[in-house]
Amino acid sequence: MKFLLRLLFIYLPIVLVGGLIAIAFFGLEKEPAAVVTRAPTSVDADRAKAFSQKAIDRMLNATKDTTLDVKESDIDGLFALMNRGLPRLVGDAGISTGGLGVSMTLRLPQNPFRNYANLRFGLNPSNGGMEISEASLGQIRVPGPAAMAALRFGLDLAFGDDTGTRLLQSVRSIRFSKNSASLSIRPLPDLKERLVAFSNRLKNVRNEVALLGDRETIGLYYSRLVELEPLHRGRSRVSLAEILGPLFVLVRDRSGFSDPVSENQAALLALAIYFGDTRFEKLT
Image (cartoon, rainbow, N blue to C red; front, side, top):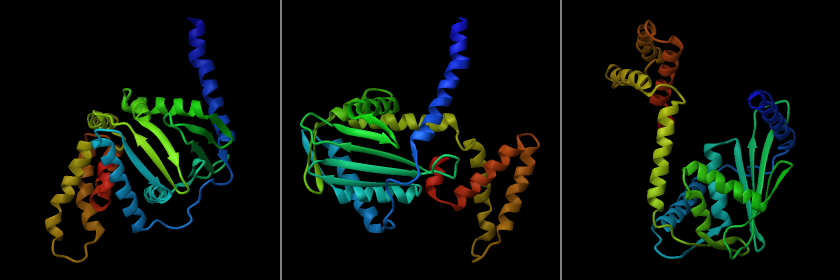
């Protein structure tokens, strides 16, 4: 029993801290592996969306083995779209007859170590499923089979069943030409149901964790903002003070029987949703 307690409260924290320090020293780099050469355009976004829709349609509706052709420009479009939503994350891919090489860089905030987390991996031509040549995080290198095992485990953990394993196994072969890849895919008859179940799991996590605050409280302040709309309808310019005043009167009233910090946060989040992007509403 003493050994177990010692393991849990002494050795395990030491190992975790040591692992984090090792990742900081060996997993981070001074220079980025991928850089943005140009700003993403609407053409990139349209290309990425079209390719995504085609790929999803092939995988969801296939009743027999099918082939998905992926061009280097398709991957570049996906990376451009990713960078548009996550400016700190960039990616670059190259396809040749020898396989696919991918580099992704996450630019970190200023810190005592280094500022770039660089992930690199490659795919080999294969007639027996998906085959990762090697993966690396900075100077930490992971052999291909170990990287595949980690990817399979991560996907299964995310889906909560063996969906990740089955998705990877559905790739029968991969062939490469000069600027494109061709994937032979085996259909998964119940893939739609599995993805719906995964979506429901994400919703449950969102609802249980309440990452950005209590949804009902935020909704109450959002409703108050909607109630204020008729007072300003038809006016070309409205002072922000005219909106903040009545809203924070409600904050003051509710803070008498609730946590003032939580009430202020909920009111600010309601303002962000009301005046901001719809994606923020979905996240909340």
